[in-house]
Image 1: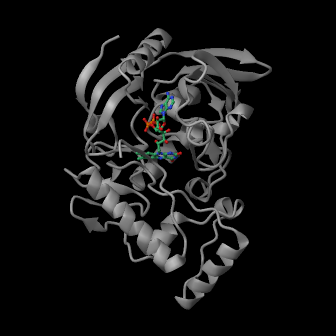
Image 2: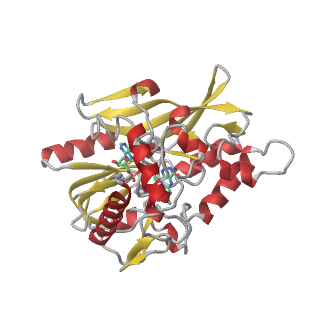
Image 3: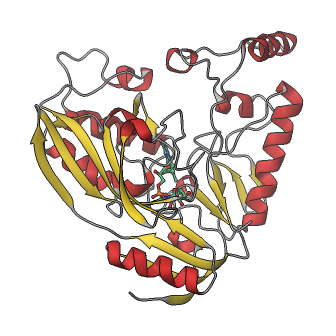
Length: 348
Ligand SMILES: Cc1cc2nc3c(=O)[nH]c(=O)nc-3n(C[C@H](O)[C@H](O)[C@H](O)COP(=O)(O)OP(=O)(O)OC[C@H]3O[C@@H](n4cnc5c(N)ncnc54)[C@H](O)[C@@H]3O)c2cc1C
């Protein structure tokens, strides 16, 4: 195990802000994970588990402890009861895994093409896009349990998957270090075309598009929204959507409709969101005085997507937080709704 000191964290994140890790280890297997944990415990250091750094904001003072990046690799394939099983190392790049499944003709993750980050990061917030969520295909998660000091296999039902949530980012946060994730996909299955954007993309063509075509379409749509990490696209220097779509109670929804009517606005209804009484956070942001492309110093809102806070170059974490606060305050004042951030704040 190689322990590095004073490692800059900004380059290890997609947002590109924040200070250094006092100690840093890239753990390639279980023994290295255990060594890292033992080192942190012996030195009484706080431990932060890092994947691809695409859903975090690191503070300007960095992490005064050990950052343990999970670099466990390997994709193992098997078959069970007509399903293709993929047992994947937490350190594998998620989009590389999706490409692999699509090239094998397996359906179940194609709509999540182009999401940055590691496979180990996907169960944490039950990653999802364009009508698919990883909770639909995850069979189990192999994790090192810091409470019991042993490796445990958690079945999907034990992971507590909900919208952008699981035990890993809620009730049991900080307890598990994910080592491997098992997915069960449909060999030869039809790709999912549940979202309006995707249906529109393929409108008018005969026959069902292939998994590879859906993957290609998703990546193109994502790129048009700055939601694909694209070198040279300043709108993709972000942590993705900065706020979750709020889930409203009946009375909150009624109040929202009342306030919208006062402003001569109609609350948008997207079938995929309305089903779960979710409201578009992007609509709230755009109707609270923020336009796409809004700029505040070195930070701003993506010119392609109202929910992405971007680092326009040389931004500090403090400036990102100031913009986040400004957005939350203005949305709350205008709509009485408190937007909940999606990324994790590290070292604040
Ligand atoms: C441009 C862009 C687009 C995005 N689009 C989407 C989208 O469409 N849908 C979506 O759901 N998300 C999206 N995201 C958010 C992000 O890509 C996902 O949440 C991703 O799964 C995070 O994985 P990561 O490896 O980068 O995790 P990190 O950012 O490194 O970490 C995030 C959290 O997971 C924990 N974690 C990471 N790895 C492990 C592990 N092995 N064991 C235990 N805990 C771990 C960390 O401790 C932290 O709490 C987007 C982000 C960007 C930048």
